[in-house]
Length: 374
Ligand SMILES: Cc1cc2nc3c(=O)[nH]c(=O)nc-3n(C[C@H](O)[C@H](O)[C@H](O)COP(=O)(O)O)c2cc1C
Image (cartoon, rainbow, N blue to C red; front, top):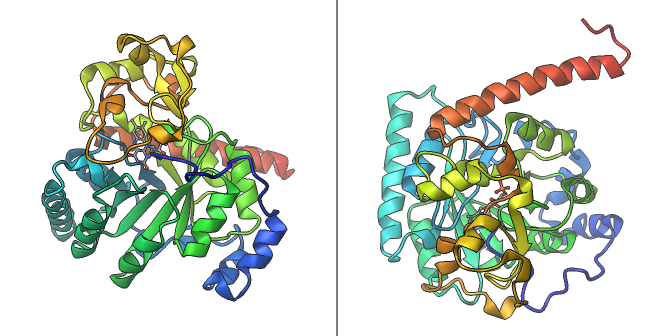
C-alpha cells in the first residue's frame, strides 16, 4: 500500500478487542456483515468472494498495484493469466491517459473472453489513494465509474466518498489496512473486503505478523480477506489461505517480470537481493516502507544513517515521484526471486508450486489426523 496511518492517528493506540468489534459489527450498522461473521472462516473460499471474482481466477491471487511499476501491459498480462491485475490510477500521467488505459484494458479482456469463453480471464482493479494531497482523486474516480472498473482498491483513508459511486454500478471496493482499528473503520464505511498489509510487504508496509493480524480480524470479520507481505511462491499463496485469508496479494514478485514498467537494473537488483537488503524507513515518503538498500546507496545516501522525517512529507499529488523512481521499493520476499520471466510463465510456475504445496499438505494433514500415510 502507498500509505498507512491516517494523519494524526496513533497506530499504537488502544483498539477495541475482537469481542467489542464483533458486537459492534453485529449491530444494525453492520450492513449485513453479521451473517458473514457467523459463517466465519469455515465458509467455502469461493463462496465468500464477490461475484466479480467467482470462478474467474486460475490462482487465488490479486497482483498488487505498484507506483510507476504497474501499467496496462502488466495488468493485461496478469488478467489474461488468470490473476487479478491492478494499477494505481496515479500511474496514468497525465490524468487524461487514465481514460485510454481503462479503454484498452477493458477492451482487451473482453476480446479474450469472447474468443474463448472457457478461459479464466480475471477482472482488473484500479488503486485510488484517498489522501488530501491526491489532487486527482475525484477525476480518477469519475473515470473508473464511467468505465465500470470491476474492483477498486483504496489506500490510506477509509473510503466513504469512493464506495457509494462504485457500489452504484456494481463495483467492488477492497481497502488496504495494517491494523485492526483501520479494518474496523473500513468495514464501518462499507468496504467489500480487506487487504491486510503485513510485515515485510513492499512499499509502505505494516509491522504486524500476518499470523497475528489475520487471526485478530477473523475473530470478527468473515468476509473477503486478502493477505500481503513477502508472498512470492505458490506455497506462500496456499499458506495465506491456510491462515484464513481468501486471496494472496503479491507485489514485489511481479516487479521482476518482463511486462513490469521497471528498469532492468531494478529487476536485476530484486533478483540479486535478500531480505537483509531491505530497509524499513519513513525517510522517503514520511510513512514507513520497505526499500532496497543497494538503490539507496546508488542514490548517494547511507541507509545506515538516514535522518528522521515524518508524515508531513507525504505527497500523492501530481509531482514528487523521485523517491519511487530513484529509490526502489521491494518487500522482504526478494530473497526467493531469481528471475524476471514473462508474467504468463510466472503465473504458470506459481500454479505448479501451489498444486505441489497442496499435495504436500494433504499428506501432512493425513499424518496428523492419525490416518495411514501412503
Ligand atoms: C514499488 C512498489 C510500489 C508500490 N506502490 C503502491 C501504490 O501505489 N499503491 C498501493 O496501494 N500500494 C503500493 N505498493 C504496495 C503493494 O500494493 C503491496 O501492498 C505490496 O507490494 C505487497 O507486498 P509484497 O511486495 O511483499 O508482495 C507498492 C509496492 C511496491 C513494492
